[in-house]
Length: 463
Image (cartoon, rainbow, N blue to C red; front, top):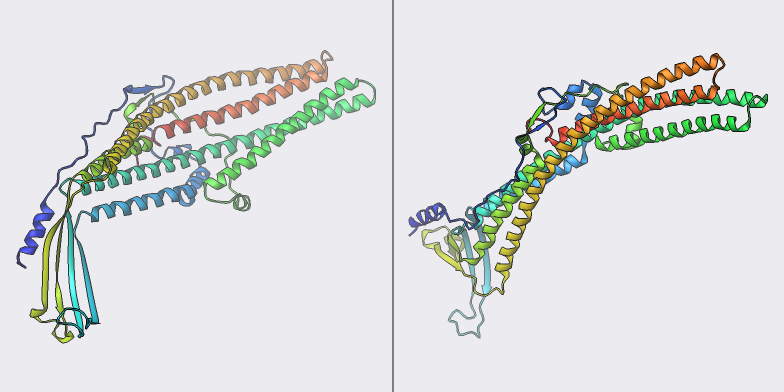
């Protein structure tokens, strides 16, 4: 019989059960074959798109964020947990072998009917037990498949966090560059309006102008200082946000410091035709698809509870009342046999579990379709915003040129005595505001491009 034990175990391991999980047909919404932006020319987009800005400071900040980000560390921890759960599911498909040793000394009752009553004796034992559940209905296989899909989804979620982190660092960095440039321009405005206000103040003292004209100049000066303080506040808030993104505290960011370029870089060139299959590489879409596969596999796990579970248990060992006789052949014991567990009456537990699994699959299918639709919306929105930003920049540049000419003409006419100095100040204010707005629009264009790269899953190919 001992010789048959390995054969029986090998046969049990070779038995491949059928799967009760339904055939999965992923229904993808009807999508366009390509996305176009007619205002751009073809150029390759890489997964490390931010390096094309050729800004070492930005590269260093992104590398620091990838090392230190708490959000990324949490997502990696979730991946490790999912890997352990997958390993657990894989292990459940194989036999469990346990070893035990025992030593007992006991006395039987003298008042019992046993002929051994009143005796004191010892029992020593060594044994190994092997247990295995035969996966006739594919329960364990489907559970492993679900765990594998959940691991893949968790890895995709990690990639989503990574892409979002890189995009957020780049966007915050360029916002800081823009704010610093706006502060420089606004400081010029403050000095200009301060000069104008002091000039008006002297005029008022000598009675050359009335109080209304003086307060008009004062209002321009005060508003310029207010704008400057608002920009300084935005600078600090963006620095604090960047500190958290790269894993520093705001205090550490202030003490350690960091550098930025003085001018915003030129926008990158977006491909003229972006194939829609890029969106299938988006990690959030991959995550939704894998969660759908996991939900489908879990239906098979739930349905398997309707059917009997069959386990095979075997044990082999040594047992003796004398320790010095424990290792003799005559002390050997063994046993092998199957066990059957059949559900008879559960008051709808299995039925409701199956219905719950099917409902979760339906939810996962809806979530998958929603993720795909949302991905295309984000890309279309980004392309439209990029197009709109370019048009706004052209219009703002035209306005800046017009204000520059108006400022020059106002100076000439004031020196000739044709207009009041307030006209010069108003023209100068308009010119400086146009410069501030132009910087804001240039930063917005970069932000829209970053959003597009994020919407495309971080580049042409998944890492």
